[in-house]
Length: 194
DNA sequence: CCCTGATTCGC
DNA sequence: GCGAATCAGG
Image 1 (cartoon, rainbow, N blue to C red):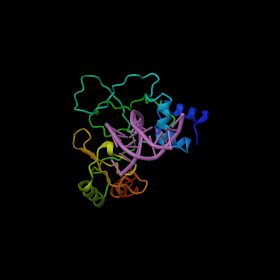
Image 2: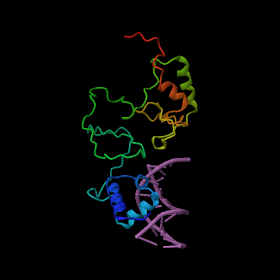
Image 3: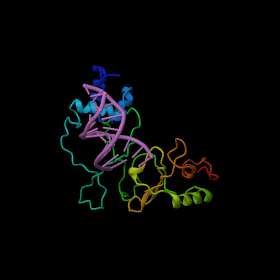
Image 4: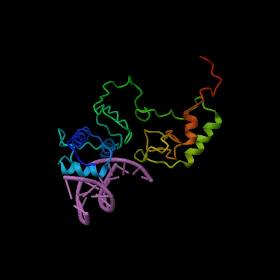
C-alpha cells in the first residue's frame, strides 16, 4: 500500500477529527499505526494543530477543593478505540436534572451498574460479590480495558474507590461474578407487580 | 496488560 | 519517503 492522495486525504481528515493513529490505520488498511504516525509527522501535522495551540487542561481529580465554580463537566470515559466514532462534536448541553443531591452521584455516564445495595439481589449472589471484592485487583480507571471487569467498588467520592479488574467473561463488561449480579434474570424476587 | 503519540534510523 | 522498532507515558 502506498500513500495515494486519497489515503493521505483520509489520514488528514481523520487525524484532524482527533482519531487515533491506530483507528486511522485500521480504516485505511494495509498500514500500521506506526506508518500512520510516521506519515503524520512527515506531513508536518504532528500536533493536532488547527485552533487549539495551547491546552493545559490536565484533568486532575485532586482533593475536593473546588473554589466556587459549579463546574459540571461530564467526563465520560470513552472507550479507547470503540470503532468508527465520527462525532467528536457531541455536546451534551443537557445536564441531568440533578438539583440537590450532587455529592453522591456515582461514576459517570455509561451503563455502570448500581452499587450492590439491599436491592433485589439474592443473598447468595451478593455474597459472591463480597467474595470477589476481596480478590479484586483494585485497578484504577486508567487500567480499565476491554477485558477488565469494570465493576466499581467503594465510594467514588472517597479514595476508597476502585474497579474490580478481574478478567471479563467474553464480551461482557464484567467478570463472571459481577455479570451475574449485573444482569439479573429479572425475576430474582417474586416481584410484587407494584 | 492495554493503549496513545513521538522519535529514530535502516531501507 | 517509508515504517518497524523503540521510547515515553496514561
